[in-house]
Length: 162
Image (cartoon, rainbow, N blue to C red; front, side, top):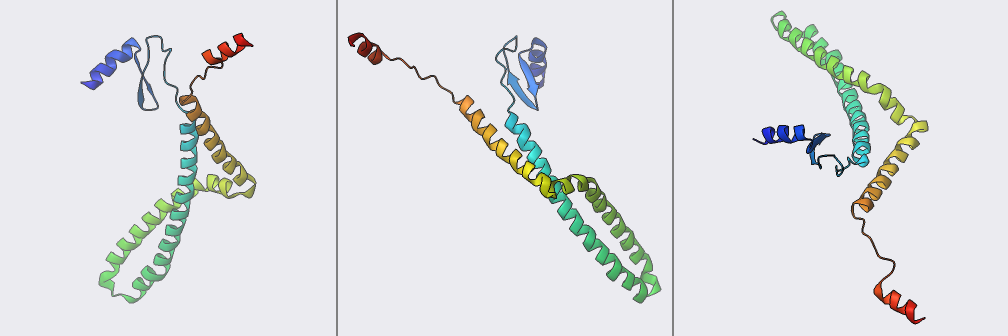
């Protein structure tokens, strides 16, 4: 039922879908809630962290699979009886497919990983993290903004007397 209501209000322009969130607005969209810039910066930082962790994990798995292939499976071919060679060949194929999967991840993540680990650009990424903190601070300030009157009745009375 909600989907039908959303469709109806979307036609009227009362609801907008911004980054997967439904936001109620007036008909003209005058009071539409702004998407936070800190969310976009945070997603970018999370993406960079995920790329780094994916690269490190996949690189270590590729090394483990190479060791398994070179040591375990080749020795099995050499030393096991002929009747077990089909099973060994299946293990080798599975090993190579797994290795290819993780090696593809390494190759896809490598350009950004090298950029992130380069000392020249590491400072820039640290500055982005600092900018995220400052942006969140400003957004919190703007969200909780209140007006503090500069002139109160007591001040007006004091000015009249003086």
